[in-house]
Image (cartoon, rainbow, N blue to C red):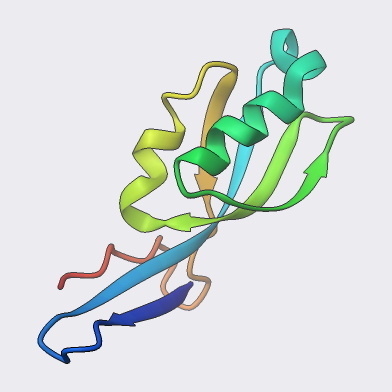
Length: 96
């Protein structure tokens, strides 16, 4: 999990975006177009780090608030969020 702080030049606005590591599972019927599925995920803010073509998995990170949107991409069958091993649960989305 990574927090990204966005500050505007005026100093009046500040935003924290919490990013989580995710694995995006691709359905077998979409294996042939895994790069197009990856591009669609990137358009939704997914930072693509690697592709496991043999098993149809994209690995990367996304804003915690965008995980649900990744599940709506055609060809995506599941999105798994890395768990916080210290507490056994996924991190909560940041509140501004």
